[in-house]
Image (cartoon, rainbow, N blue to C red; front, side, top):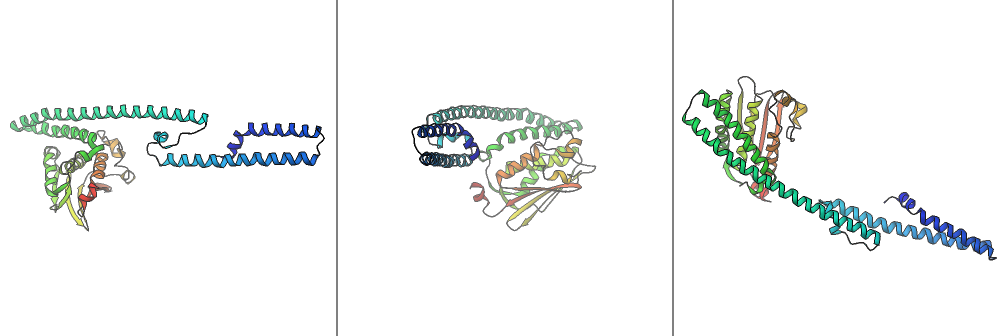
Amino acid sequence: MNGKQYLKNQLPVILINLLGMLALALFLIASGNSIQTVLFILVVWLIVLFSCLLFFYFSRKKYLDKLLDMTEQLEERYLLPEIMQEPEKADEQVFYQIMKMAEKSMLERIGEVQRERKEYKEYIEQWIHEVKTPITAIKLICENNRCSFTRDLMAELENINRFTEQALYYARSEHTENDYSVREIRLSNVVHGAIADNKYLLRQNNVTVTVDNVEYSIYSDDKWLRFILDQLISNAVKYRIDQPVLHFSAVKENDRVILSVEDDGIGIPQSDLSRIFEKGFTGQNGRIIHSSTGIGLYLCKRLCDKLGIGISASSEGKGTTISLSFRINDFVTGVQG
């Protein structure tokens, strides 16, 4: 509460009191009172007036500062009327009722938006599960009729399946705790499973895949981790160069197992490295490869945060290394907490 603004608001009260003092002084002088008596009465009036103004200023300031502190501590600030005391002054009660009406309107709107989001999420999940049926059927047809055409078709089907999975995981990423199951898994099984999921894509683009020293046990969710690796494999293929190589390796450091996914592609400019996990960010490479959406790595980061997996990227002009860091001590306790 600003003191200067408070005085400005109190100008009508001050002017009325000054006019009253002038009228009283003229009346007392006309009644034959001495100047000393008149001055004494006016000084007392002024002292009382400014004492009252100071008292109301500090008491009001204390109340409003407390109200501001309460508001700053609230995450949903539209709920302020629920925790503030109902004021006693008539004009303040009007504003209090306005705030209550605004709060009610906001809660109704939030409830409506949440219902719409839930319905849309359920529709997306249902649609994805439905569309997987014809994808699986086409895969079986291709498997039973192998030729160069069906191999190319299988690679495109892997892309379609990846995009549908991306949409599904994006829809679920807000509440992953309802879908994941953390347990002990073999890192090698997840890595080889992700490679198998993308075998036609890798074969179509002549990607050489090497896997070294991934025989570690970690605590994570097999399905979600496999999805993360699918996104990293897809990026490595998307930003490839001639005779691309994709290398998986793992190392144990203190209480962590670090899985590195390294490619020899076009790399990431240093100016873009700090932003590659931002939603929708495509950077300089995204302007070259127009199929970039900026969603894949954003989803990886979001899911890693939910699962307690550290994720980082490095690039030295050519090639990119994405590192996933898994805790191996008290991991389950940390995630469930």
